Length: 455
Image (cartoon, rainbow, N blue to C red; front, side, top):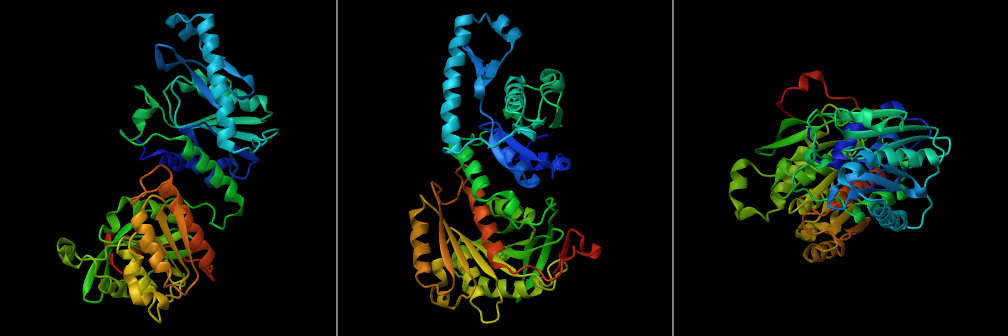
């Protein structure tokens, strides 16, 4: 079993922890890699998120090999077997402890930004990491939670060695693991090779997002699991467009993605779409061009034609099972941002909200003043060109509008946490501007479960 990234691992792990939802629960993530996993679990279970500061004590000549760990409150766990085998002296061990304890104190201040730790006394504490290797770090985290008054401790990880329960002993009251292979060498092997490591900024972003947007106050329908999308053919004028339609149960609204050429295969748009699906939105990732047009890039900056097709496709989508009676919004990227705005500017468009990530909203030009739908433009803080295009478009808009800048992000939002921020901004904008459905929308009819059908 391998994971796309730590957020995906967290979502899958949350599915095994549903029985804890509704308990007096706190989720503690182990920095750095465990925090994105814990953030997804906390969100799914409606629980507050905090960190549990633990530092591995690495063998001096082999830092990846843990000889123990230290944590907040002076808690320590020493692996005597490793210490003896490596010939570690008492002085070397004490020096390692002092060094790592100083790091724990510094990171506690940095990660929480001066906020006090979440109270654990009398509560169920779910300790989450991205994986267990020797178990020293996890054991220390559980002991920290116990020392702070936790009534019950559950340790949950996506991956661990097959004998991990024996390694943990009785430090946790419950253990949950998705994958425990017999042949285990390192946690990192179960995540993509070459993927960006989790840094302090992403840890801080996860914690701040949990503080600013507490799960208990969100309006996302509870109990959503990620639904399975299906390939569809969408008649739009004289063209037949390909798309990917995903319909969750108890849908809140519909969001049509209008990319600038990469279509439903864009990994960034699919990431955002999955986030919206989990929040209860139907999504349609639409290829704006036919296969023949995709091969001919001469009309790459034509936005009028894709806008007309988008309007036609939207009309048909409103009658699709699972979409009837729901408000519709657009999410545009690339030149698709201009196409979304042009389509929303039509007099009978009835579009509830528009979000554009990067791209060229300015190409909608003279149609921008006619857009009535509340519009959010999202740009990367380091994407100067896109910022210029966005500000040009904002100057022409007459509807409710806003510009959100993702600090440190560039054109493709590839930086750690950047695309997650885009997803959260889009989700909140659609929730704030889409009217709730009058009656729950039903899931797609069984007759529409073929791999490809015509909308």
